[in-house]
Length: 412
Image (cartoon, rainbow, N blue to C red):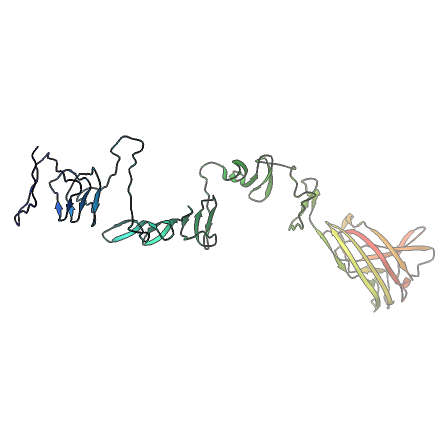
């Protein structure tokens, strides 16, 4: 092996200095410093142990390092055709040999960064921020994501905050998503029906939200109830399946407060005869009139109350006069709160307490029967032969028709 030792080789201006030939190995000793530019356009490979290059080091197509390479300037990998690449691989077949790229700042104020870009600049970066020990990713010249010092992954956020737009994947297992004016979470299952979201406790499913042919459902854990939302109803489920007449709404220790229905309540069956379609209660003001000529009268008191359950009306009332006026004909109680049903539905019951009425001879007690398709009830008195309508002449100025109850059906 030949060896040449010189202090300096200076090529003549305008000429090229060639060291070695094809197939030769050029070795630069450890600790050597190349203070000028080294152009290795004709160097296919080079072995550079612990070399320090202060000038430009260009043109090498294949550089093998057996030690450290210290570059005081910028190291540029440039490929004129095809892809430019940097490959770092372990040179020994051993389990403790790990390829590694280390970026080390000068001090704790340095932020080691890998930049990505083109001839227009470097709009994307991956950097380590020494100030808060976070890793940050920037695209389009702005920060988009970071991993903070606690291991929380933040997207469009700089700190964990459930009320700031962005996503937090927290190291404690918590996930938060915040969006301004839009959907903050979307779960999509394709092709088949089934659970879309599953909820678990200690690894065991305790509930799910999903879809089946009948509609969207919410299920509890095994042997528990759920709901399915179909096109026109909300129906019960149990143990993951639809049920009929098995599920209670509330219980003795967990009651609902008020139930607001715009339609009816179907009880004890599924037919129209089982449907309670109305309930109402309120006050009404009873009046007295005669079927003959009209005349003025004066009241000392008139008040009443009613309950309507389906088509059944139960009402109570009180009337007392101070002046019976000049009515004639049969006595009628008017202003019933609902129209009396027609046909055979007008049968009803009445209970009356009255005083200061002048009943016909051999008559006892008084009552009233609702008039079909009307809002009045005609008073009658009873006798041994039956009953007859009560004439206005039975009234006195201080007559009282008090504490009466009338029960009837309405078509309303």
